[in-house]
Image 1 (cartoon, rainbow, N blue to C red):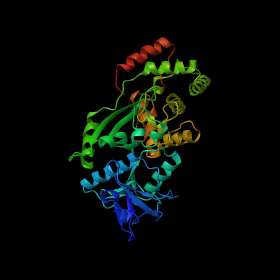
Image 2 (image 1 turned 90 degrees about the vertical axis):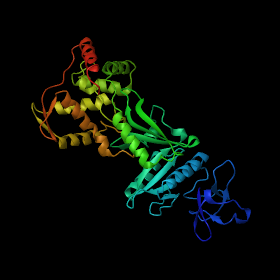
Image 3 (image 1 turned 180 degrees about the vertical axis):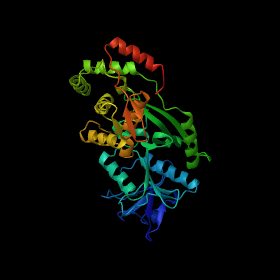
Length: 390
């Protein structure tokens, strides 16, 4: 821990304290009130620790040096910007102690959590929910063990956030280099666990590196970047065929379903192959949920009108039926996840299957094209791949 209290119940910062044998009992744990002592040397970051291992409900003695150094680094960075900041401030109504608590305005306190060790999904959800339900914003920053490397593990997905300007983003701290890295415009590659993303590093030692500077830079960079990937329709077709040949369970289930509906992996319309924005939220096989939604839309009467309300009701039904399953991502709202339907509707409008007659109503224009044989399909896919960027 980086803070302790003295016998007058005043909070003390380990980085500002001088080690003294005569005062070793002057420090107490802010949580359990048991005596702690200051550890301060030439190499390791100064911090307080219990004399004996205690069942302290808030502070853990297994705190890593990276965690201690990172908290101290962020604390000094906020202080240099004259941003009000508290280290390890206890929030009694939440029974939580964020690594740092800052205020960018008088209304909304912001909890900063620097995560360097494993954390259960349930505990992460509880802590995040505790903050948001009590009027706090929360930002999670990941330590070295969990830095982004072109893929997202189930654990890393817990900490992906979303911003209107920079899309899906992921924060990580490089303690050894005094660097904050922001991975932004994260988007999942088709038929792959790999992610497309842009990354920018900010040196926290530089005077100009402020929160305002970072926000401005990310806004400028995101406007210049294009979160687009080339259509890989042919590869997607081959991906399904390989999955069938290797008996991949979810692809076999999909194949069986479409056979019952009179379709095959050859006849499938191109619309179910086209990627939607923020596919990384969705765990379900992308072809399957889009096929189900397209089937429902085309099941309406000819020139029938579909409303946004009906569409969202259908999405909720698919979620309840486990036909559309999302990854556990506590920082992403269910409303954002459900927008996959809106993005798919935009594809159908672009393809001429639907016509928008208002901001919330669409009329069916035509049926999607089914393919008679693989030659026709591959030829059509190749033309589409080179026509537009998604």
